[in-house]
Image (cartoon, rainbow, N blue to C red; front, side, top):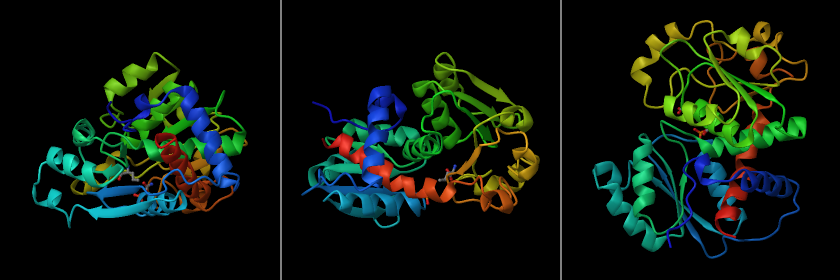
Length: 299
Ligand code: CP
Ligand code: NVA
């Protein structure tokens, strides 16, 4: 039997996702004391930098009784060109799960295809589903539910935007994405989910934010796009989440940012540090949400 992976929201049902969020709430509240990872080894493979994903997976694995093994592509043979399909079959014989952060999403799919243990997507150029688990938890904490809420995404149609589209399709909330022409989210992901819920794509941040309950943004240049920074700074001028933009949102609106943030670019200092910002809770929720994910994969 092939193992259960978590590469995208296509790998989880709506019911499972809502249960996962309930488990995360119990974990955060100290009401979950099981150790489903006892005796288990989890390899954490990073081909890109990370603060939150690395530490939350290391701490979370230990808190559930398991042992994390941090593997940077700078140190392992992957960085010298060993094929993923070879690494996958070898690591599967040593460890009980693989988490990977890398560039091409197809690489994670290949890793999973050859793995005999669960593979978790810790971010690709296409998707960042683990971050979305934390974001949904933060949204649920703020409003009690995600149902009936309107989420606005301001800026790049990147991996985070694509994962928000998948989450909206699965849970059925309205999503409005404001991005400059040429920086839209993935078309196939949009097409698959636009049939399931209301997803608006516009070039106008004001239109996206009007009456919205959650205002979200992310860096203009993601990891791997460093050579495009100047081009992107020009393209995204006018896509800053600042106090003026927030005056258009719902009076109870919250602001999310997966971090790291570039103050003065996609978000102003006053918004990031201001009363609507939930970014520190959101970062903490990576730990609780991913522990709930691990508990789901190792029942
Ligand atoms: N948000 C997020 O994934 O942060 P890191 O890059 O620090 O892991
Ligand atoms: N879109 C960003 C998210 C970082 C957590 C990136 O891919 O670099």
